[in-house]
Amino acid sequence: MAVIANRRAAMVLFSGTNDMYSHRVRIVLAEKGIEFERVDVQPGDRLEDLIELNPYNEVPTLVDRELALYDSVIIMEYLDERFPHPPLMPVDPVNRASHRLMLHRIQRDLYTHADVVLHGTEKQASKARKDLRDNLIASLPAFAARPFFLSDEFSLVDCALLPLLWRLPLLGIELPRQATALNAYTERLFRRGAFKASLSDAEKEMR
Image (cartoon, rainbow, N blue to C red):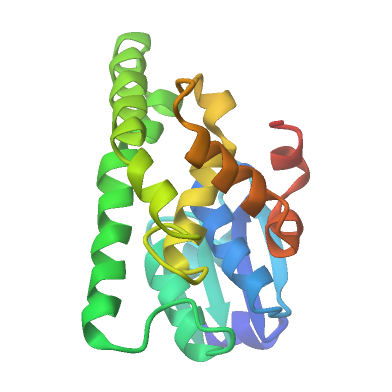
């Protein structure tokens, strides 16, 4: 691992070009203005460096000198602690735990269904699409309550949500007319400079 780290830049991200989980990490990197080398990985690629760093051969995988991390949430929290400005998690333990719980719920209630839409059978995708839409509709009041999702400040929760919301057309999700607060949220955050900087060429073509 040390050999790989030494022959690359100090921080390297192995990233899928249209992968939701990699996109989350790229948003955090852009928000914090972190310089890094991006290695694009296509589905099915077996890169020697990646296999050595990550036993699951998956993206995203982050290398920071001799440290190799995988799992998007672990990487996002590490970056927030390693580069504390601007902070993307609350300082106090109670609110921090609430944000971690919301990250878990976003994965379980939204991303799990999105993964099935993208990779499941037609029958599985149809049910997952409905479940995903229903869960988004159930969360509409939260988008109206505060400037950011359940927060007055931009956070890792927003970083986790935005890649999925960007892909709603790709996922075949049409929201009802009453989703005005969610639409306003996405339009405002999609204009954010860091979000624009996070997009790969493949992601730019999704809309």
